[in-house]
Length: 124
Image 1: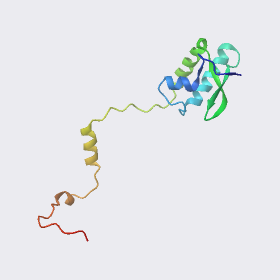
Image 2: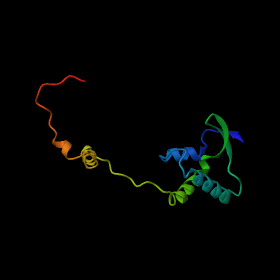
Image 3: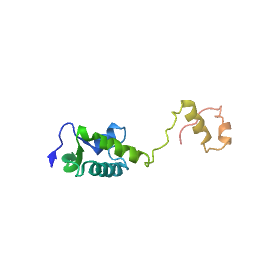
Image 4: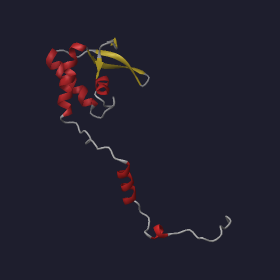
């Protein structure tokens, strides 16, 4: 076991490079798939390194630049099964105003209220 060496890539780093959080809920499946593909390809266990996670040194699987194809293959196998949220179109200000007005639960009578035209009264 060695300290995380420059140039090696972990599953968490790969996820963040792909625009996902390092603690993505499919990250475990992604890591397991990568290790499975590595074992099938090379006939041995993938390398490990120590990485500081939440204040503790932990053993993580690390892949060298020559082994990054394993992460790509694992990504393709997991991406097909993972539940990605549907992309949402950006909402304009008018869409947000329309939605706010449609969701308003007030009574219609309150829209007809007019302030008194008489003198202002003191606060009780």
